[in-house]
Image (cartoon, rainbow, N blue to C red; front, side, top):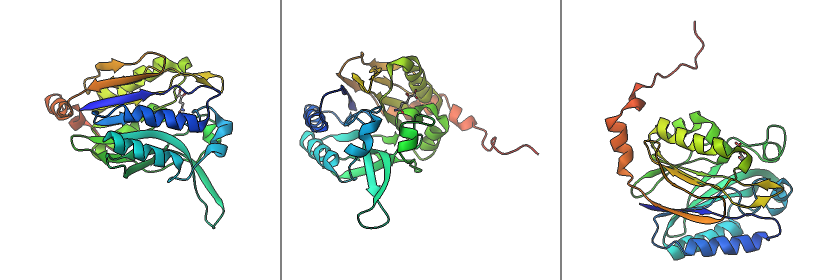
Length: 270
Ligand SMILES: NC(=O)CCC(=O)C(=O)O
């Protein structure tokens, strides 16, 4: 399988429309890949909190429309990263909650999956207070592997990834807007999630600086043994990697640590 991670540059001063056009053009250039991945909140920037509400779109909004056309033209599966989504309210005309929503499109341009980020970043500020949390694990069956999807800060929560593995995930896809300040955590956590789940991890971050937060870049692809297959530099870059999805089953068979799990340890001791 060939995957292309689009480590998109999100800098001040570019309009959302321009970013959308650039991203669509980059996706179209990836014809021949099986899977293309964009980062988290690339239309606004993951730290541009003031822009979330202003640039929020409905699920079937302009980003979905542009990405569906690009996926169709390129003939690729597209994890289109995430957008600030304004869900419908309870009554006509009412605003519903905001979500950090990932979109996965098939090569026909159909919406194959929607994942609303479960763990929101910021503690008592930013995304954590502005966005609502999703509550559903999402997997996407592709012809040769099953994707499990998570977003950025989710990477710090191993139980979410174990949940994805329990429902069949073999390739864990993590779009992110991870800051340079914590780049060492990014690399370490991506490798940890790959090793403990014996799965591929495809983690795609942003480049550039927005809202004063320099981004780490360094998108990374890790195999089920924890080896780094490819890693980007800090700037805008397309990271393309060929990998064999059958290695997941082989690794789980040859080193069957997942079978030694002891479940129910979170229940109180009596
Ligand atoms: N956008 C995010 O989720 C940022 C996460 C982050 O900075 C961290 O976990 O550290």
